[in-house]
Length: 73
Image (cartoon, rainbow, N blue to C red; front, side):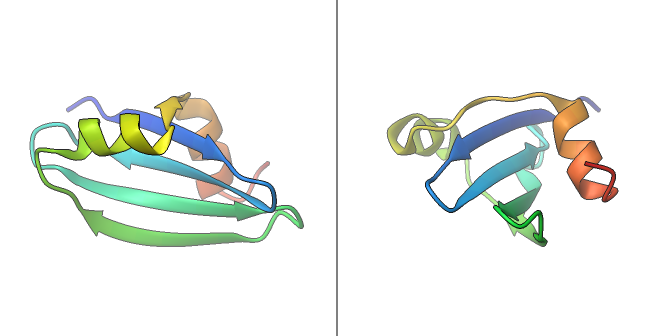
């Protein structure tokens, strides 16, 4: 299985999403300016790609996601 990654930067935080394109399950990381990370498991629907586009999410790197997930960044 190959995940897809999407990212959006806000003024006070950044959101990076890992998405399984077959099941639409994912993990959302919210990274605050102080490097605090909140992790949430998510269930998306088949419209998620349109939602990401409308909300200004861009493709992202699996390396960046995993560094934050592991607390290395």
